[in-house]
Length: 101
Image 1 (cartoon, rainbow, N blue to C red):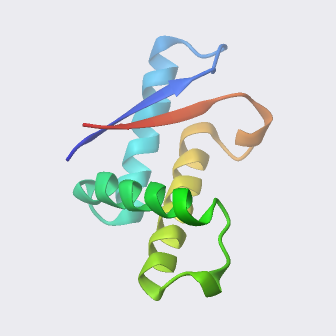
Image 2: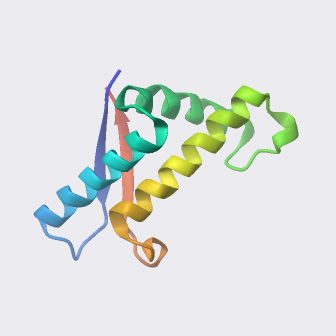
């Protein structure tokens, strides 16, 4: 399973800047998770857990493996956002959308 990243709502960025941010996001996400092949399955597992338990589930409600998945994804995504958009990423309306193939 593969994935694609698309940056939306980043109006002030040129096409080159947008693609560069998408590339940085992917590189850091893959590095944080340990391998490019892990992005899609970890994201899919994360999405299933969020659908079941919500965005910020109580650690007591999760198994060790589930907590590991949520923690790993959230840390990787946060690092990828910082790499792609800088430390002030919350000030804009930029959003990365991940699509699984």
